[in-house]
Length: 186
View 1 (tube, rainbow, N blue to C red):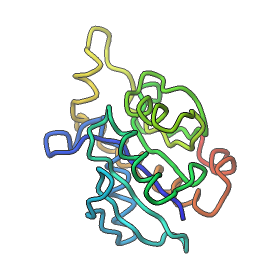
View 2: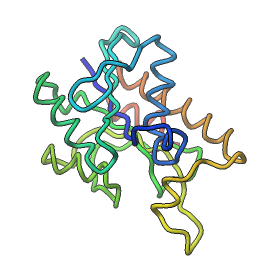
View 3: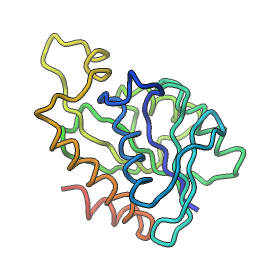
View 4: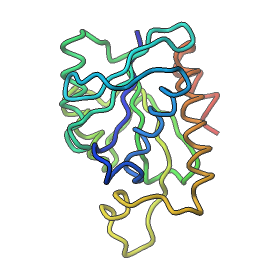
């Protein structure tokens, strides 16, 4: 079994914000495979199904971004889920809008959701799909930027990036993550 955690904030006011691209990618993946992400468990909304013949669980923590690790840890402990089977999908300021970057370890890089996951798992080694949101213009507060919506001019880049993330996630379910990185880190 594989489990994919998309990071974001619950509630309609955050739905289309940059910080919620992890939720957007999970919703798109769920839609592709007719998976309903609607079970409330482990401080998260969860959907289960099969993708490419692999039992896959899609998880959207409902703890708000800064406490994402609580939900992930609760799921991990209750279901005895293995960290090697985890992929976390989230927004990344250091990757330009429209691009994805895959990694299997690293620091939080200032991302509070990842910081929480590292805290609750005790490791920086877990598979990640980072979705680019670019950095704001100088003088623009980071918190306002990440909690802001994507502008219309970035809509095509956003949609392409969500497609790329879904393709990478599907590929990773039947291939080693290192090979997935080689395939999708352009």
